Amino acid sequence: MNPDNKNPTNKLAKDCLDWLRGQNGPSGIMARSAELLKVKNALNLSLNTLNLGHFSDRIEPSWRTSPPEELLLIVPNATLAARLEQVLPSLASKLAEHGYRGIQLKVRLVPSQRRPSGSNLALAQNRRPATGLNAVARSAWLNLLSRLPPESKLRHTITRLLAIKPK
View 1 (cartoon, rainbow, N blue to C red):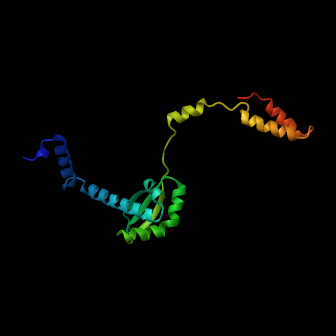
View 2 (cartoon, rainbow, N blue to C red):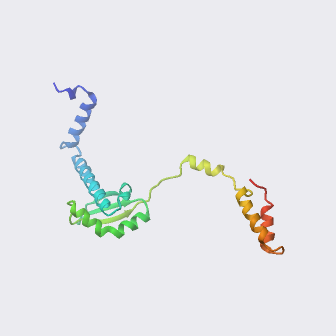
View 3 (cartoon, one colour):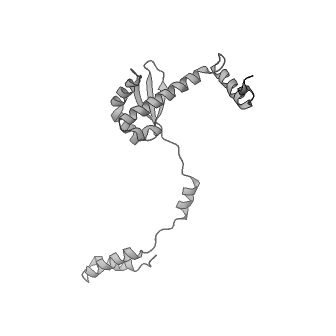
């Protein structure tokens, strides 16, 4: 008796994998996801050799199966897209070293749809505009005021500034 069949979770997982790999199941999904994982690993290694490994977690590879097979590098911002465009030839040659020869690389910008969280929004609403000067700023302005001529317009302006109550 197989001990794995006693555990209902293992049996369910085995049944699901059998269905996915079977003729009636979407076995292509498994093969495609395994291939994407290999591409992602090769892309990470290639980016590391180009000293761009810190970008690897923000780049999502995706295959486009048009007549010439293309590897789309989906990025969340324009800065990263521009940087990748600069190194595409080098990146293609590094990927060729990992077995991905004759593919075309394209960078696709898909901005993230991240919205500000509620806590950041609450902090922004609770902020009040600054009033007055702190002690360091006040002493700096007083130092400048002591060095200005008595009829200077700047002296008059600084005097008005110092009339504001301190924090």
